Length: 295
Image 1 (tube, one colour):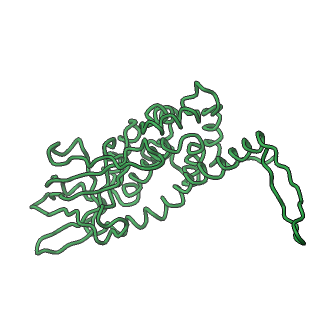
Image 2 (image 1 turned 120 degrees about the vertical axis):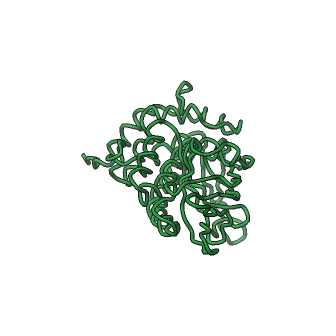
């Protein structure tokens, strides 16, 4: 018998905890997942169920109180959860994407702040894209203007997962320094440390699938951030972001592996059980045609 590597033991435990997806009283049953999606409803119960088990703890390094020792383990957990509820898994996997820039480039104080948020059951986000520029991040217009020892953040970030629900968000922006010099930097935006009037939310973006996601955006109006809110140092935004993607993209592929192949096989199995496929060879003129009859 093959033994699972230690990086997969937590996934086996989670799979057992999630139980039978066909059971109607299961908070992550397929029936409840589909019903919530059809209502455009945020999967609060499914997210809470995963968090009670400790899902987001695997996105926080051990030295800061979490259980993150292997990104392979994090990817495997995302894959298991995505098989049950893709919307809930995307919502919580955003905690990984939103925290990675801090783990990679942040100082100890910033890492402790992020760890406290995730271990406390709250959420993080990454505010990267803008409506007029999409993935062309070098064309980003959100700007942080240096005013003495502080920065004033202005502009809009669009298509941001967890925008309304997060406590912390990593914001990619142009940092405008003295003498009109600009660099790209990452800022740690903490809703509890800024004036409520300095930011608001963009409308929810409607989608064909995963319709319950908190997918909206930020509108910043001279939101005042401190020097200690810069992740790494001024001008390191692109560097830290590219390092983040080297980790996040393989890990987030667990979403597709979980929601795609297993569901396709399950659907095919259900189809095969309730359909009779028969093959008949029929001759027309000098040719033979293979006719597949579904009855």
